[in-house]
Image (cartoon, rainbow, N blue to C red; front, side, top):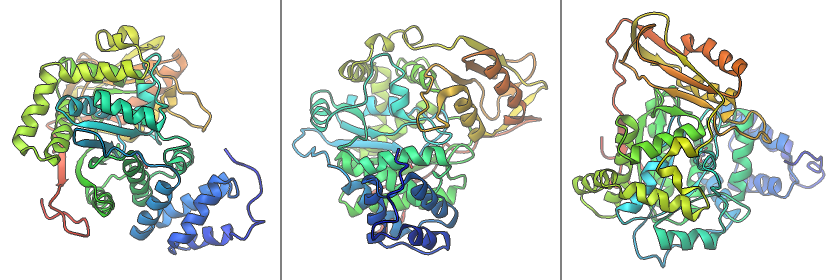
Length: 457
Ligand code: URA
């Protein structure tokens, strides 16, 4: 990352622009473009952009700044042209959650039902996991694809998952890595610009967004998440993309695993029909939403997506994806034998009987990071094997003689002990009953007005 001191010697008044944001003002599209372009050209430093981001996270970037930033990030690279492909092109993206492994399930399901899925993904961000880190837990898997390789894989196989690169949204790639380690993720405009620039560069005509709300999301409040979803949908529509969003529950880990290899194993087990629960339901729901947006009736879209799960065609598409991108294809047959595993596994149960009434879901994600599943520094190398298996959800009975509530997968005993010591505070147990609430809070579909505001419930 750039740390030299060139900035300040040119005509760009970086400190003044940071000051505008610090004081709650709004930057123009030209000012934002100059800052981000200067950053890519190493004329503006990491420290200056981090200060700008922090000022914006505290003061809030505006809707207009979200639109302008999206354009700047998008313009920093090329766009994939998928126009010649035969099937409907679809992409999905989550705004980030804990145990949120839907991409590894939804993308193969969409491909299995005839969509062509061209997905640009991200790495772990803050306390949340990232699809690229998860896929790279599969021995040999590469997420670095040229635009041509990305496009031709989608054409041949119906799916590809790639990283932003020097060619594709390079500005998001740099900002994303900086936001990850500077506590500057949680601003709706920054999230909207980051997500939508990748989705627009990826080239798909149909976009499905999973906007998370709750203690494990960047936005904890459902109304804030709805506004973020509306903002993203408006940007997608303005670019002529058919964009839908689901605002979904993130008050507890979505799936049974938090950590890269563990999440891959869980996703494979879902596609093998070996797991039930919220991860399965939401993955099918997201696939069905994407398929319905291509013109298939809503009920039929759910039926086909579920069938792709049950008849093994989703698993078969995941195997094709893994093979095409250099990964060990045996991962779909015996994930836990192929994926790296941690040397220390410690089981945890709460000290008192009761039911789980809530989670510090963000802290669970942070604890996976402490174990090594995420980055504290931009140059950190993550450990794909470590993480947490969370075997219980809100409303489940637990206790000292009950089922294992959490399994900590750690690199050594000290790391495991450090995490175990926090679990009493992170998993709330009390007298029941308790209900996790709805999985899908809100849907924003094709029926939105021109401002992107939902006209449905
Ligand atoms: N996913 C992204 O790609 N960017 C964000 O800012 C959050 C989630």
